[in-house]
Length: 147
Image (cartoon, rainbow, N blue to C red; front, side):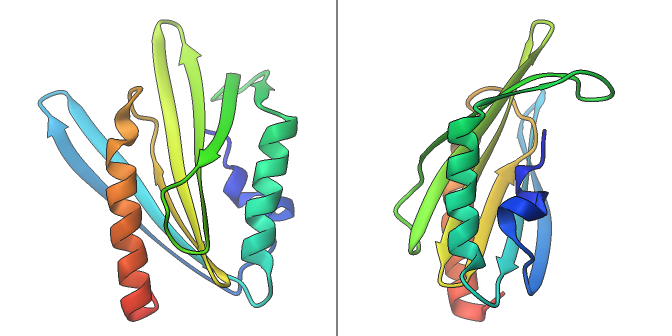
């Protein structure tokens, strides 16, 4: 996946950041892998990151990577996220490699100056079914503990 959230010009520089990865054995041939990232900003960087991401994807919904590992065409879309926090979005990235389709979905929730980002790692289409539950749990934990 093209890591839009790691692009400093889109997200600014957080004053603090933490991440955790989780995997779930969803079936005999299916492993779901997701990551939770907390990004806290000293100013309105969280709000700007959400705005920048919406704008960027609106302008460039398809990105073509011409060479190297991960070459190919990536399609992005933004939709409203679950009703969590001050603002939320669902970002979808999809690509096809040969006959295999892969998707990377993310839910971003802004609560004040913090972004709670929950993303899946290149799962089969429709694999984002755990994202909302994980985002809700991550937000509850953040609200209860600040981490």
